[in-house]
Length: 232
Image 1 (cartoon, helix red, strand yellow):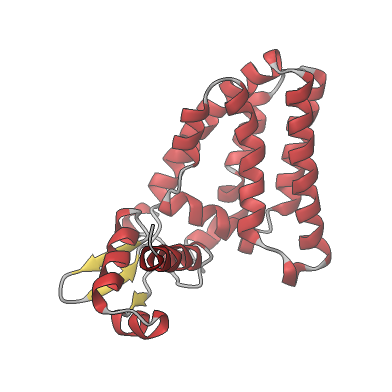
Image 2 (image 1 turned 135 degrees about the vertical axis):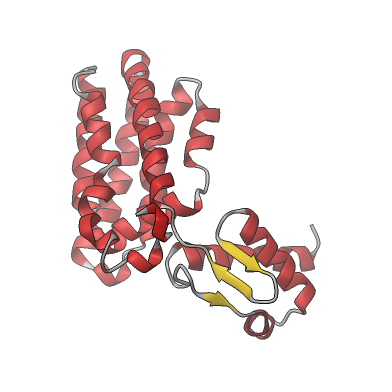
């Protein structure tokens, strides 16, 4: 890949990260002129990058009107959570029944990393990185998918979903989910250590629907403008 292509990829990654962190809010316009000036690029590569953002559901390009950050679809979010509860409950059960001591240690190490990031949130919230916390959370879940030979399923479930990924970030930022997430992951680790499958589905349901519970009415009030109106 040449230097120009690298620059364009970095711009895409930067804009995508800014959208996922709500630095560009759902419904905000993204001005081509501003992006050209900001990144010192001509219109052609900027339009190509906006097209790529559109393909990943982060931007909508409106003919003769420009580009806007897409809004979240609450109905899609609920369906994706439902799917994850169903699939992940089964995968974690299979993992607990078949995992090796090395697999269990991988889970423990991932939980330790999550704890360390959680301590930053509790002690130095200004330095807390929500996206890093979410990625570390995902890495713990990935362990049981990988160990049970279901990595393709994990990549499909955890792949960047415009609405769901941003909803999870909003939960961290506004819902203050860190204590709940740590408690849920500690319970998952306990089940792995005890080789117990009791209550897996209830645990996964509580964990994965946590954002819906924590954000509650804010979805319909404070953040209603972030969501497609017909979906809430």
